[in-house]
Image 1 (spheres, chains in turn brown, orange):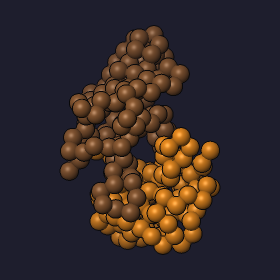
Image 2: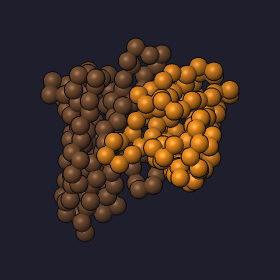
Image 3: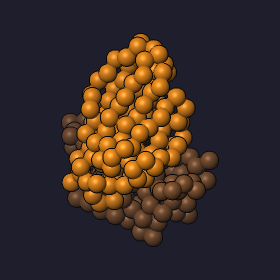
Image 4: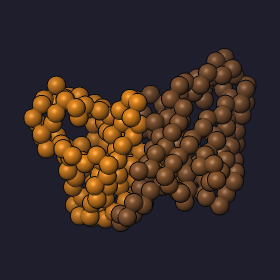
Length: 115
Length: 111
């Protein structure tokens, strides 16, 4: 079955540095990949979507890359701030023979930005 | 922007009770999803619906059922609540920018 792996260990970085989070997947070739931010006790919030034919996508201080050969996506936050501290989730679309696409999520990586 | 509203933020129920979790979206979208989220396991798909009265099982449907009588409302039903159904429940629908919009979640505790 399809599997999505994100680093389960928390990532601690200093304010102003670039945070890089990794998402690896196996047994599947998704048409697109998404990244979400989740704060404690809240629902995930959509950040970015990147399609299989796109290598890179940017939005303000965020950058996502998608390497379908390596089956990997990297999520970068440049000039990180303490307010960026949250859990970041990677998600892939999955059809699975059903009536519609649905999203399969990784377990997320907790990012802590120290002032 | 799509707004997804879950009826309760916190619920405490007793083992064996029938529990209803309600979700309402305001964009008339066909697709709606129910996930549960547990530490170390991430979000897991319970059920989803792709139109009124149409539903499909997700990865962990056992112990749950759903109801979609109107397009804007998708209900998750725990037929007989058990302690292993203590979890955070999240409803979602496709939103703007091709991502999903999630509700704020319902933290259910079964005692």
